[in-house]
Image 1 (cartoon, rainbow, N blue to C red):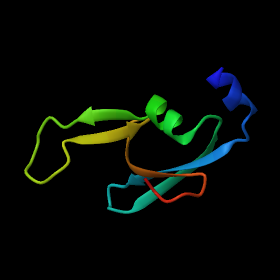
Image 2 (cartoon, helix red, strand yellow):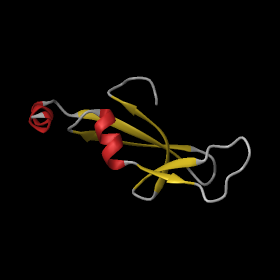
Image 3 (cartoon, one colour):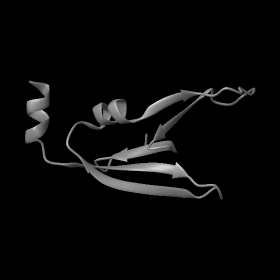
Length: 79
């Protein structure tokens, strides 16, 4: 039933934020046909860092091999 509802939804624009090798932020924008949280949960991989350091995050997120630092969905505030 839930999948059927999302098929009838208008496409939502999602923008993934990546940090480049040189420290710049790169944006990758495309359409999705499900809720933002469902898409993020189904497509973004959470990876635990092997080498943990004090005062740093122990996990990072990836999409198609790129480290994702956040996302903007449907024009809302970045997550």
